[in-house]
Image (cartoon, rainbow, N blue to C red):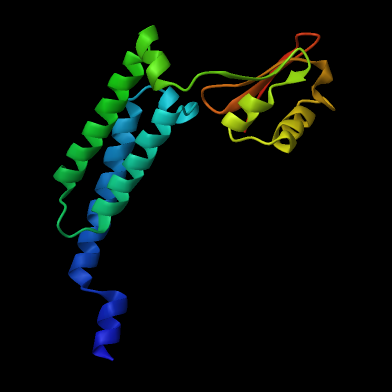
Length: 168
């Protein structure tokens, strides 16, 4: 019975340490994110997702790891967020932007669905039809352009050139 209690509750002093370290890591991440660009949290490009997942992994792993101190986790957070900030700045250089960001993909041009591009994007005709309906179009015939944006949204420009964007 003692073993079962130990497995379920652990060492109570260690539980207190985990609570302190978790709270400190959370507050540290909040402070660090406060100094990053707003785009980090608002509009996620693929490299933004990587930074967010890495940050969550660091906080989640270090919070309960007895062999990882707050300073080590904070150093890892600083490295990830600094690399993210540098990458965000490098995107301002056109040649590097083409390397970092996925290219825009034209799914529909003047009513014609580009099935090859659709397949390359991992989308089906049904996926495209659903997005077009969400934009108020019954089919691709009255679409001037439908573009899969770098951040994963599909922008639809109708024949009347009214544009909307929907996250997909």
